[in-house]
Each structure stands twice: as C-alpha cells, then as structure tokens.
Length: 207
Image: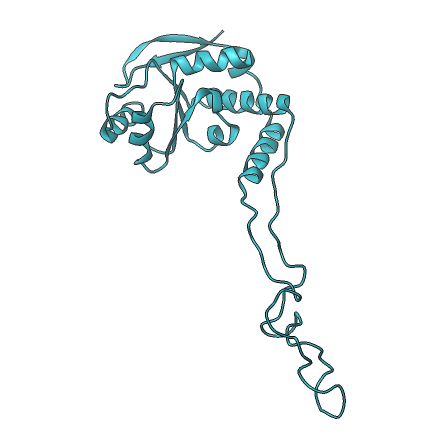
C-alpha cells in the first residue's frame, strides 16, 4: 500500500490517502522521461528563424569590376557569401520542429514522473485548493504552510481562474489542470502540490 498525508491549505494534517501503485509507485524510467521532455521542448519551438541566401539579398545585380585587366579577383557579385553584406550559406528557414511519440510512451513517462515525485517526497496532497477571489497572499500563505517556497506546481481538478491568476504573480510557481498534466511541468518543479480530487482524476484516467 502506498499512502500519503493529506493537508489543508493551512498546512494542517487532515488525513491520509491511498495512491494507486501502478501510477504513483512504479520504478521511474529515466529514458522514457527524457524522450517525453525532448519531445515537449521540440514541440514548443516556433521555428520562425530565417536568413537570406545569396539569391535573396538585395543588390549584386551587376559584376563589380571587369573580368580582366584589373588587379582584383574575378568576382561576379558583391552578394557572395564571403563578401560583407552577402548572403548566408545554407541559410536557416522557417520549419516545423514538432514530432509525435507513442501514447503509451507518454503515459509511462507521466507515471514515472509522478512516481519520482512520490519517491523523493516532493508530492503534497491538499484536500481542496480553492479561492473566492483574486488574492496572491492566500497562495503565498499556503505555499509557506506546506513548506514549498521554491519552484512549485499547483495542480487542480479543473481550471480555477482565481487560483491561476493569484499564483501567476509568484516567481517560480505554476498551475496546471489534472487532465493536461505533462512530464516537463512535473519534473521542472521542486514540489508538486495537487488537490485530492485531481489525484482521483489522474487515477481514473491512467489506471
């Protein structure tokens, strides 16, 4: 059995919860997690870099000087790559860096990431993460009570605009929804703070 303590937003112990070992208790697969992170970062690339080739640089329409009878190299254009202001050899052009990985690989990577957080005691379950208005001080107080004053990821069962916007003002703190959780987000935080209902959603999706 894999049990974790449940806290409230004030940092008080309010009970225990049993985690699904097939999701939160497996041996982390570092190779699969690496593949998932590289895939995520590649998919985030805009791929909009662009430079001009020799044929695209403005100017260079005429031969700079005569072919013979002059003490110069036989240049045909002032826009050759080795000239100042010339084109770029093999210039980078806009391209799509994204690619896909198998669904089972993604699932195994996420399970490995969650299990690594539980194994390293960086997994904190909160009974309920809610706010009734925009108040950054409430999120700061919760993080302080839970001992998560560094990089933290707050996971909620659904989008909560009060929690998201209140946490967005705090450096190093990010929010995510249980059904869109990604390996990169999980591994990139020092503490994973997750609502009890969000744990149940993840268990239902991946069990």
